[in-house]
Length: 229
Image 1 (cartoon, helix red, strand yellow):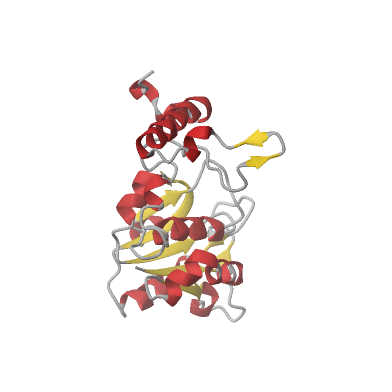
Image 2 (cartoon, helix red, strand yellow):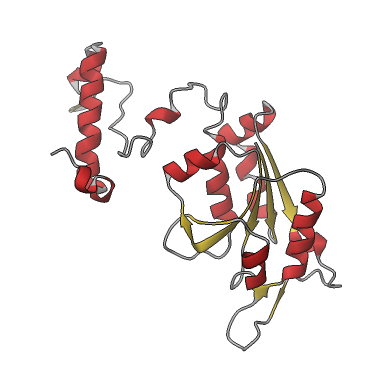
């Protein structure tokens, strides 16, 4: 998978993609992430990529020309499956959406900023809009990093244990069960005996029951009418 991110603030993303699992994925050649500075595509002498909104009002709007030039330049070099705009009012990102998008090959992610982008970008240059939640951030850089992380960790070979992603929260419509590690006893707090039993079927049943109970308690909307209780 190749991800090209268009942003007015590229340094915000530098450290994120050079650490941990994402760095290893890039080093293994399993994923490419390229961050592009939209200011490099600006014809303005001060390299501005924003302007005042028509009709007045507070805030600035990202202009269409640098974005159009950047997307055109990238598409001249290779095919892209989708151009994605990170927007508060886009399609809400969840695990099923991530699973579907993980099969894409090359994608462009556009980071909004200020009061967003010229509406013509959204209508004519973007294929999909994605939101990471019902709240507003200062820009699309963090959402772009979140989406990239969620996609890359699903690629074959990225995680050390291929089954790890399958047991993540939301993969089966439930939140993940509790997890424990050494020591078995810490003060008065002990690891549940079933996890020390070595009985795979009992452990599986316990984890599934814990996931159900935790989902009912914390995210009941995931169960809805499908709650087996």
